[in-house]
Amino acid sequence: MAEPTRRRFLNWLLGTSAGALTAAVVYPVARFVSPPSVPESTANQVEAGLENDPELLEKGFKIVRFGDEPVILLKTAAGDYRAFAATCTHLDCIVEFRSAEQLIWCNCHDGVYDLTGRNIAGPPPRPLAAYTVHRVGRGAGQAASLVVEKG
Image (cartoon, rainbow, N blue to C red):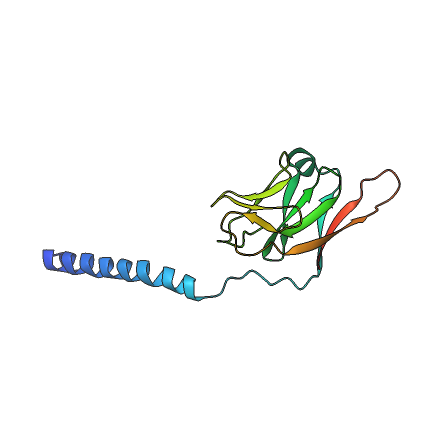
């Protein structure tokens, strides 16, 4: 068996360092270039929950996944339900509902939308995409399901 020498040790150390550096550069680039494994939604509608959902009752809104897109479902002071794309049209930040002011607000750059999705203040260039909300009865004495549909 060969005795370890300084030259052999340094060659091994430099070789593994070069390999680690190459892996540290190639791996993130390969992950960036390869497409994500999130399937596109082919569904035209999604069940967003029940009318008596605690999150919806407490905060007045709920973020729901519609395929790979987030949708904001909100309950207005009048008691009706509305749904919009949950990404701000300025820089794709997630919006939230301010029930006291009855406004949809983006906290990234203080963008404001009204309850029809129209941009009324701040930098957003376009209104939010609107979705249709249907109440689907589940039976006597049970809370209705809320179904969000593209429309």
